[in-house]
Length: 173
Image (cartoon, rainbow, N blue to C red; front, side, top):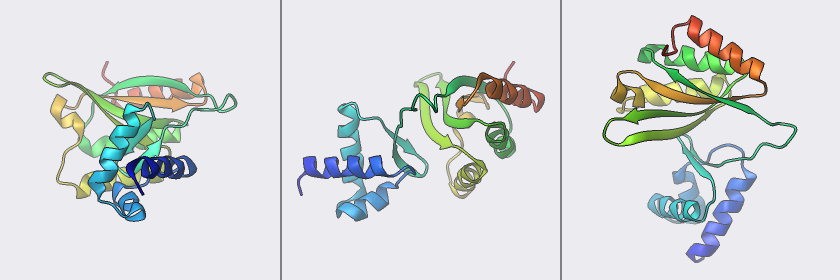
């Protein structure tokens, strides 16, 4: 199959799947290298397809339906690395969905990474990936300061998340 056909099938596959699919798994399914998948995703993004890269793989950004409309808030946080799981659990336990993490780097500007953490299991898997990786969290580059975009079903949920993060000392004031 040629590249255009593969990208169409890749889009259909991502559209059917709600959970992220790793580049390695996609490469196996299409019989190509992982690098070819990375290039395909870059070309698809250039065509305005909203494909997110998470620590678990690629996923299509879903537009919320009118019934499932979300409210979004960005929180500026700072905490020790060992408090990351508590921070994530606080967000999801109070009804939030952690969409991303970003930092403001002095040289590179904004560095943004999609996370998509919807529940405690997602949070635990993220922490496990951090602990088994030789890499450090982004916040290490900015002395702990980082931003999270959080979605919830109501302003009240976002207010509760903010209050609890503040109570635990995780927010920059």
